[in-house]
Image (tube, rainbow, N blue to C red; front, side, top):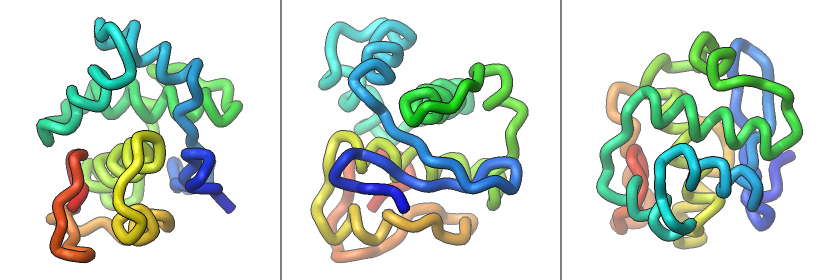
Length: 135
């Protein structure tokens, strides 16, 4: 079971349950990949609510590698998530929220993988979170 206090989440990719975690090394990888100077710049990049497929591949790949999986971004790009693109957005949203923090209610609501719907955004407590697909 993922430990949200350590920034971990569980997700199902290619039908397999996997753990993801953006460790300090994974965050450094994302800083370099996105050309950002620091972790806050990485968080701010995604707080605008925009996410490309390439961004999702890189974030999910870094999260998988941070949790100890030996996987390349090319392999991540070929993976399938339940719910298709909305499922990937949900994974990224939960991972970023677990890493950079969110209100306890929002973080707990996103702790378990949820069935993807056409609208990944979910009302939890009336507040809106800073990451794509979050509320």
